[in-house]
Length: 75
Image (cartoon, rainbow, N blue to C red; front, top):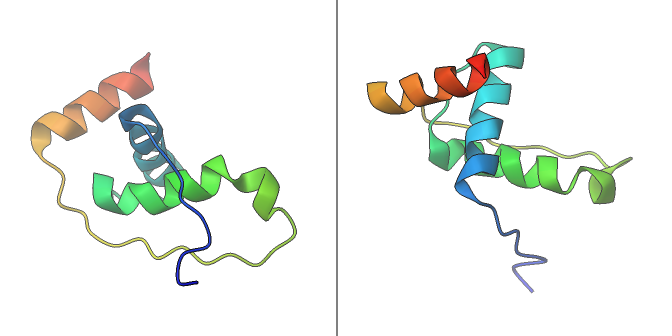
């Protein structure tokens, strides 16, 4: 099979992943790139002990989206 599993994410999980990347790596990534990190974060217990690579690319974030992310960080 080409797909081993599906991971269902909500907007909050994606935003949290975008914030995590900004806080920990200093990299601003768009939501589409944050999806991969959010999925791995959600599956961290299942992936523990495995070597995992996540391709994160794209930094096209609208200013209003960035503002919302930063407001979440303040809360």
